[in-house]
Length: 116
Image 1: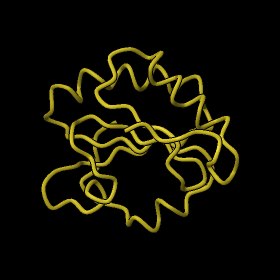
Image 2 (image 1 turned 135 degrees about the vertical axis):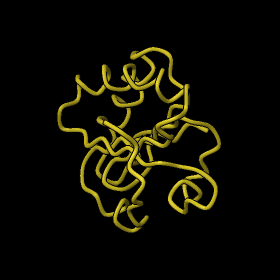
Image 3 (image 1 turned 120 degrees about the vertical axis):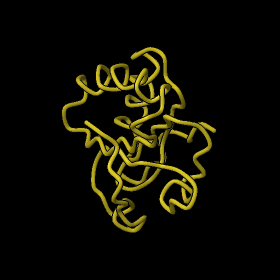
């Protein structure tokens, strides 16, 4: 799965129901390529999670709206509310922990605070 150059609107992301893994990076980024199998392995345990890979970079409004600084960064949302994030994950356990926090969050996203 490659990072998509077309950007969804932030309002569309905020309106998505359920568990969403919003993955920011680029196809040419070495960190992103190294993190891909880690992220994919963790997501296998959460089949209901929607995985959206979005190309990031200067002038990309979606990444700026989430204050993305390093790639890959995966922002985990529950019903449009950020509950957790991981940056440059190097093992599936780290990603699974974030997904578990999101999965356990109430529909208003209040069960966990977002990691900085």
